[in-house]
Length: 136
Image 1 (tube, rainbow, N blue to C red):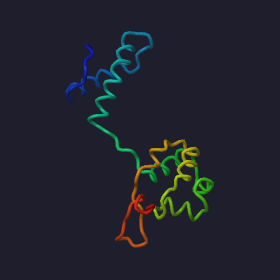
Image 2 (cartoon, rainbow, N blue to C red; image 1 turned 120 degrees about the horizontal axis):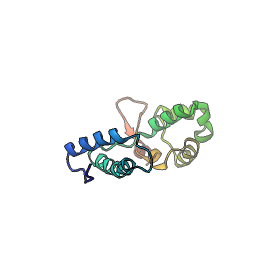
Image 3 (cartoon, rainbow, N blue to C red; image 1 turned 90 degrees about the vertical axis):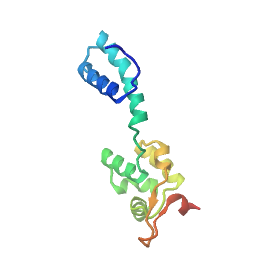
Image 4 (cartoon, rainbow, N blue to C red; image 1 turned 135 degrees about the vertical axis):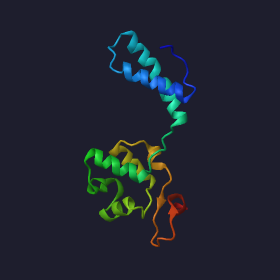
């Protein structure tokens, strides 16, 4: 296959088909070299045409807890008491900077994931607000 930039959806589909064909190429072969050249092109095209939104901070915490087999109790050193962990995970209390630092260390999540804005639930269901508003 002649290697060229991916400009159209047809180009993208053709490159994906070729990547599938040569995915298990032996290292050091021409097909392996071709695969190594094609993958960054696919990645660049997908970043522009199929962007993935960053995860919601609370969902990221929950997913990572599941991945690591952690319980809510395991978050207490990072967040505080059992009730504080519950408030944070139920979106009734925002993450603080100190919590974020500790959670990044415990969970291995990048700080920018946990620093992202996310909705909080107020006591009244008709009054949803965001973490940044709650901090102000």
